[in-house]
Image (cartoon, rainbow, N blue to C red; front, top):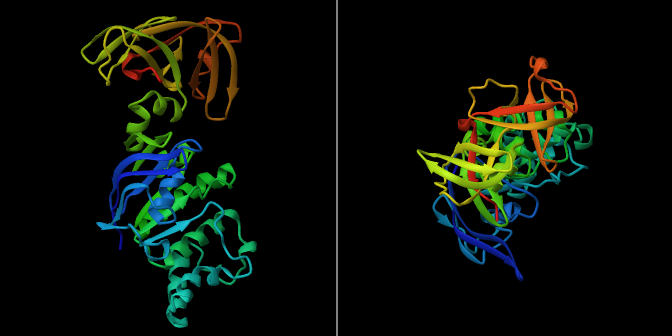
Length: 358
């Protein structure tokens, strides 16, 4: 079974500090939904509010259409996986997974069947007799998931469960988590500050900043069409060039910047005279690209960073503007040497003009 989760204008305050302010959204049944944002933005507070560890100062949390006001964590149809996992080190894997069932008074035979089924679900069918300390980090993550699923929650809440893992294991566990979620079919609500995790795994992502949700959308929309300067700068690498709109028409804005007049998409309907920032992804700003592109800026090559399947090129313009490009392994001919003066080009369709951040 699975359920939707509705947040209806919830706010949470701690003394004079407002951690979550007037947040409303609906998470569909069976959806993999992520809250993404920097530390202190309120995403973990939202998770703890959904789970019942925090009561909102205003607004309502509904799970499966039922108002959760006054219902404690142990009576909600949710299970929470903490960042630390909180596994029992002196118990076997099977005992960890079956713990919640034992507390609920489930008989030994049924407990054994349920544990065996869940260990198969998380690809640990032959690991039940081991101690938790004998497992790898990724295996411990899967034990925590199996233990949470044992109590048959309608919603599984995950608070940055991969943050302590190394890079390759995190990447592997992203795929594992998504596979498990599709297999069991229940609603997953995931908290992370890692944009790679959110974009890779999620059906939809909510980007949070200072207690508010700035944008909700699928991964491609969040990356390609950010709605605010914060989302554009927080999600993925980007080049930001500030200026003031000189003209706007037909969904485009011509922005006068220190690097010249640059043209970009104008989804927020900026008008002439508005302060604006143009955002261009590094993969869309290329040195020596075809002259037919809409925009060109002159910069000096400063440095480069080889990262295997791609290379970052760093540039300086007018001393205080930093720009970055990303080249693939076959773009060696376009790699300038440090100190070279280079023309960087990008298409207006690959850039977006947004109101300048306050």
